[in-house]
Image 1 (cartoon, rainbow, N blue to C red):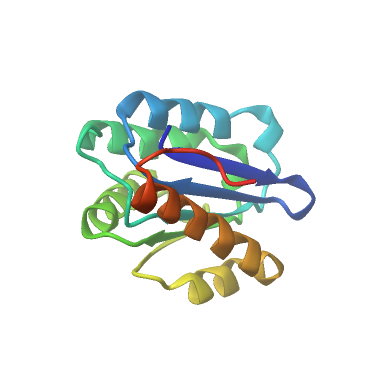
Image 2 (cartoon, rainbow, N blue to C red; image 1 turned 120 degrees about the horizontal axis):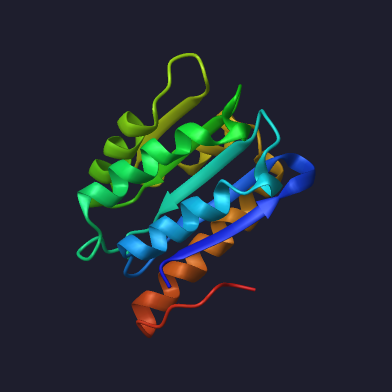
Length: 155
């Protein structure tokens, strides 16, 4: 499993952390989950972090473009914001491809940031109260892959 996902319904915020090996089917399931009615409130903000440990060697460019196009259906995008922080070069390129495929003029805003630019991303989407929690979860994902190669969700 290479995608950790958490929903914060009270704050209309979602967090996704891509770590380890990510494959086409997993990305497809993640998008299907996001498109459920549960997440349908307009104005949602999201943060997607692509960890250094994330591998796209089994993820096709077509799956990324398809995910972006499928997100045109998302009811929560009206006046929403998505920040993608890509901590590796391949992840940055795929995030930009997703951004272009998902783009619908006047619907919402998506920004792709490189490196460890969590502060700018978190400030832009307005979820500073979760900053420490987000950093902890990302660090846990990275640590799991560095020390064991094992994939798990942080508690």
